[in-house]
Image 1 (cartoon, helix red, strand yellow):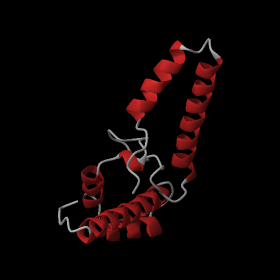
Image 2: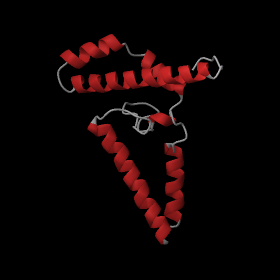
Image 3: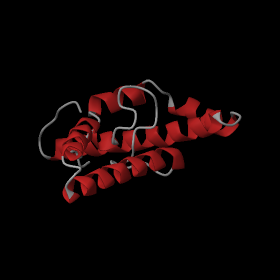
Image 4: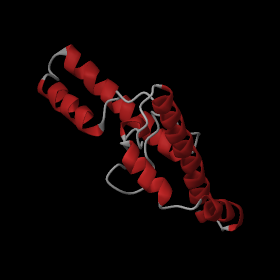
Length: 133
């Protein structure tokens, strides 16, 4: 997983800098790019596509809207461990809308987190660093 993505705090910092220099063309361009990035993140939350490291965390909490690649493994693991895949699977099939849609998104996120944690663990153990990820 590529972990060097800009987080919300950094984006806020760059927005403040761009605001200070919005009289210059470079400041206006930076503001446009930041607006576009926010729009893309929001679109990805609403659209319901597959998850990747650039996807915004779609559920409530401290990390809502944060790129998944910027969220610590411990937080991802905690979110995954607080849900049961079997229950999400049942809800995604039998709940009425909109609960069905939410359960499907949670199931997709659960599977993505599981895949990422397994990949990180395999990478860590092949490098000889046996540690709890």
